[in-house]
Image (cartoon, rainbow, N blue to C red; front, side, top):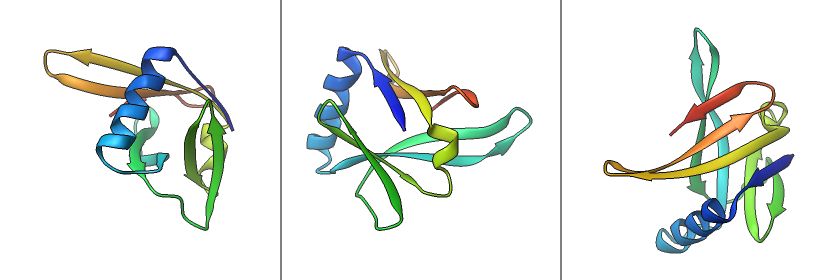
Length: 98
């Protein structure tokens, strides 16, 4: 997997992983709609069937069967009055938020 993110996103991911006592960021396919798959990102733990990639000290995991969707992706962090969120943009799928 090729994963990129900016410094603001890195800091937010580190803070969330610590806050929720998790060791990894999991990429996943949440479902399918008219525009193709809906992508998701959650805090989780590594499993034996995962592909693992560590980038700049942050561990990302994805189920091996879904790995092809996340071969080249970017993670973005945004914070608004309504809360904060992470967006996953996949070169093969486009963007999705959660």
